[in-house]
Image (cartoon, rainbow, N blue to C red; front, side):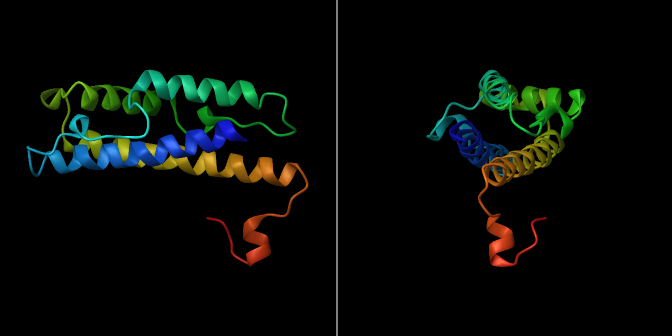
Length: 137
């Protein structure tokens, strides 16, 4: 479970990272790489974390599949955007690419949240949402 929680934490930090990249296109003195984050933000770390999460849960009663939520092209776009922002390659991408990467990261975050809930429920604990009477979207 810790692997999924770590991945979710990284995704939240990455959302902040990409938000700062979006702001850069409106105010050039805002540069994400000059800000401090809990984790390093790059495509290699994302791949490593997804690989570790897949390995940790390969024997679970259900399949945690992050590649089901993003196509290979979408995953490639997300990785290249992260690396471009890290290297400050502002000319190789535009605001549209950053906004698309934010949407893809949100989809990935929802898949991780669903994995956390499924893991929790598979251990016999009640769903947080069912207990509170809230429908998870």
